[in-house]
Image (cartoon, rainbow, N blue to C red; front, side, top):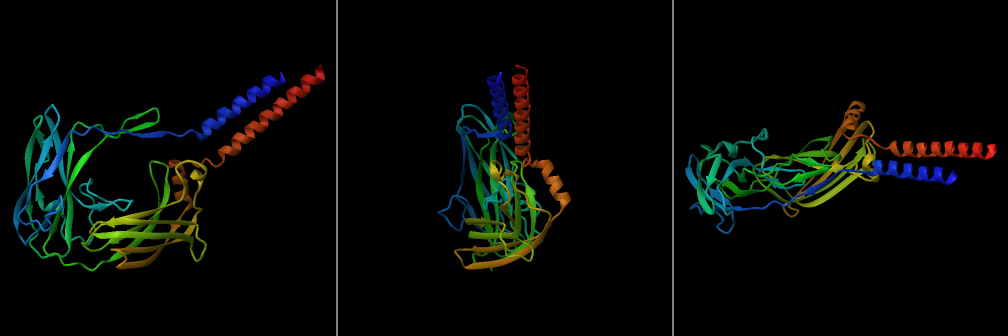
Length: 345
């Protein structure tokens, strides 16, 4: 009987441990790509060596640029076309896949409003189709660059919505042709501001403190490095830190740089910042160190905020103690049963 009880306890312990450690798995499914996109040369191309549109324009200039969608498949395909203003993601990468993003307050001209184009293009099997984009340059003078991208996406791709037995299927592919408009190639003086710091969480259970920087001018910031630290307010004790190099910030865009509070899995998953006021410090360098900003902002985490956060990302820090407590309780019960059994014998 003693051996049976111990075997039962071991089974229960393993089962509880498995439930505690088990986490969903995400799988990236590589799509089959049967199309390509190629630009046609424009007469006002500034840099003829690059594979995107780098155009010099004059006030009120009207122009048509063209590119081809090449369908390499054995059936007719339709493609969505969208021209988007360049933005910056949390990894410090310039992205062109979001349309109608709320512009920066000091954005003078939005490239999305300066173009006309077909939103949908159908291309027969094993053939190409030419697509025309009309450009109406701003009537006034502007410095720097208006940066966007022509995004082309095949219509019948599987979206990232299916979830089968804890596996997220990711099967989407698109092409982007850069579109840059300039009236002058003269450099614009860089101006980076630290707007605010705040705590956020993502769908992958990642909690982070993000420092929102605002690139205040129409100039692409290159070779950006960030050294970030978080301390309690009026303290020198560093409780969070992060550094990253070789990033970029799109013209007239916000860059939310994250410093992780927890890890999506493992020992650090349940780490949290206690309610209170903190200071985030950013040391930012750009353009091979030609520009340097040292900035800081205070931010506050409330009990209510943490409560809402824990609903999205449950704090499992007490689960291990519950499991251990259950195991101890079962051992006590088993010991009592063994003691009574021996006593009766």
